[in-house]
Image 1 (cartoon, rainbow, N blue to C red):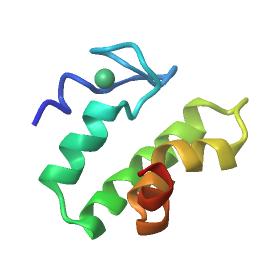
Image 2 (image 1 turned 30 degrees about the vertical axis):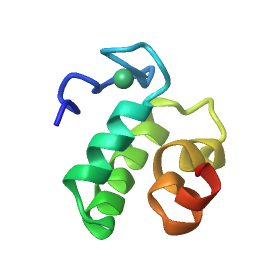
Image 3 (image 1 turned 90 degrees about the vertical axis):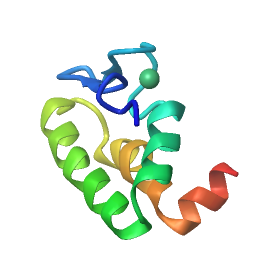
Length: 80
Ligand SMILES: [Zn+2]
């Protein structure tokens, strides 16, 4: 699992490894492989709380969609 490398560069929340918005596709792939849906959603929810604190000038709904929504079955279907 390479999530430690593809970690969020706070407080900007870009990926330390690839520079894309965190979570990048590598992080999503790693989390899907490493965690079952429920713990994956719990992990994403905790990062979401950190992100809305750091990105106070960004719409929380956009942060939710970016960091949490992809972990849900509906979000995963949308991205497929
Ligand atoms: Zn990355």
